[in-house]
Length: 65
Image (cartoon, rainbow, N blue to C red):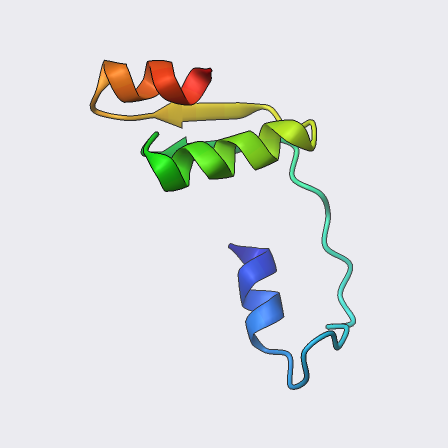
């Protein structure tokens, strides 16, 4: 969330915010659908451990793969 807020206050695209943003140590994704699965995938691809939560066990199984 902090990264989004820092990026949203930039005046020009590509402009540095002047703040050093620390890389996340872990991530939690609520909803293992298409969007949540994509977020979890990209996070895991970068080496960030991910916890996923969904009301459907089937979605969690698909998101885990």
